[in-house]
Image (cartoon, rainbow, N blue to C red; front, side, top):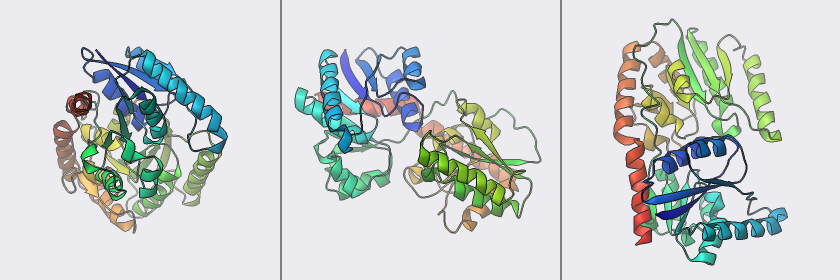
Length: 362
């Protein structure tokens, strides 16, 4: 058995990164690898892992770059190194590249290889700040992230491009869509500036001006921080401002994403993330913008469309085309499911990651 230590960004909630980490550790070859996941706080993700029989430890890991955490971060780094040693870890893999400094501390203490998973958009300055050039292997989920890494002089041979995966059994196309006079468009994710729910409202307003049979769903909730709560309040105010109460509905935080996808006819994403693969696996077309992993995930014109956010008329026109052409919606949705089956399977994803482990451990 090869013990591997995983560092998670969060233990109290399940976002896209946590979902992807869970796919990996619950499907890894348990006859060969022995995972141990470290979460910085307790909650639903920790419970999810433990229910799946994944050993999980809660250990506070403060932000490395904040001056006030100078002493706390060193203590946390030492505890992580001691935990890795006790677990006899032969490799450490972080699911959040902002934890790179902790990875490098363990590497220095124990002399074992480390892997950093890049799930966010990076600038070249961030690549240098988080010392990606010292990481043994880097997994990027988009060409955009890989480009930022190489532009900051990171050795391209250390970088692997591996797209997100999805549970193809859980996310299935509906057997027979229920006929409806209303066409439902959804955006999924935390309510925060990066997800651009305010722009989604502007798009909804322009669509409704031309087709009052379209409905819009905002699925997700804000984190309990002043910034996110303020943004959530603005989003609700914009719905009133544009008089969309009849046409746009807030569905809140949902944990039953396969059911959420069945409630939609079309997914629109103005950021990126694993929700694209989930919608496609459910046989839904997707409209996204050219950011992050979106262009790598959507096959333009086949499984959906990659359209610039500005001017919004381009996205508006695509939504109107889908809403008025059921055959187009069905055809693109079928292509989306087929592409998901060929590209986003968990088994193939895990095998690629295990291949990296084997190379590092030779």
